[in-house]
Image (cartoon, rainbow, N blue to C red; front, side):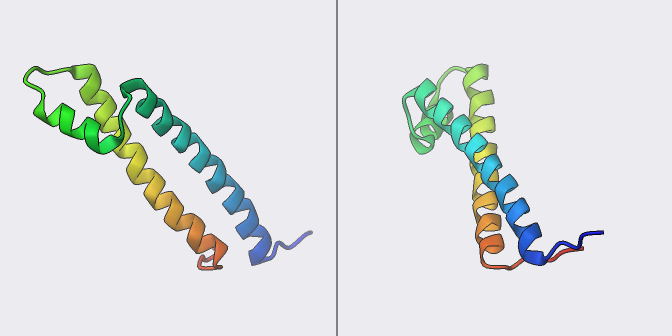
Length: 88
C-alpha cells in the first residue's frame, strides 16, 4: 500500500484545476471572438437591446457562468499552491 502525501494530492488536484481553467479560458475566448467584444461591452449590448435575441441572451448567461467559475477556480488554484487545502 502506498500512502500519498498532502503535497502529492495537492499536485494532482492542481493539475485538474489547471486543466479546467484552460477549458474555461477557451470557452470565454470563443465568446469574445464570436461577438468581437469583451464581456462588459457585450453585457451592455444585451441589456440595452430593444428586441430580444434569445441566442445572445443564452450566450450571455453562459459567459457570465464561465467567468464566475473561472474566478472561483483561480482562487482555488491559489489556495492549493499555497497549501491551503484539507484532505479528507
